Length: 185
Image 1 (tube, helix red, strand yellow):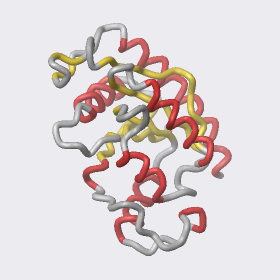
Image 2 (cartoon, one colour):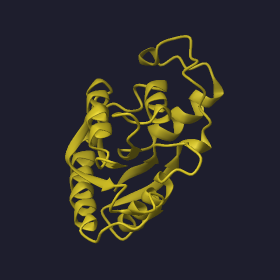
Image 3 (cartoon, rainbow, N blue to C red):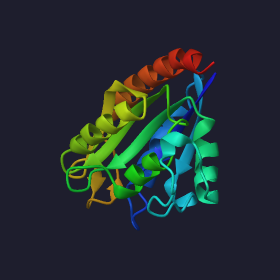
Image 4 (cartoon, rainbow, N blue to C red):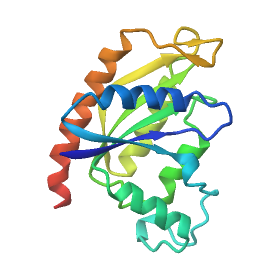
């Protein structure tokens, strides 16, 4: 059975991402095809990238980097829950992605995004990053609107049809995550 991290991609006070990630985790936990774990960037307190050697060299010198690398290394696939800030993903998520390299390679990813345009532009931004990190991103994604899926832009109340989108995305992430596991030996 593969292990899938559901990564809360915002550290902003009052963030909507935590409620969204818990909803995804609740739906995922009803499945028996993988194990799912919430991973909150807040728990890692990563500063702006402060490693003196590029992550592709694998020579991590800071304890926070080593802790983050160890956490990510144990997963076969990821669900990134991302807000859209200024037509891109959050700085916190981009920074967390940039800290490490090999721990991401040959794994799968899906996206759950939220924003005024459903977070679509944040996901497009992340898809470019995934290619460089050698993460295979799946087509199915979940896009949540701040206007229709959140009451007063802050209380998460997703429309029922989004559950089908989560299922489709998870189906693809689990399939790809399992297939790519063989590449990692």
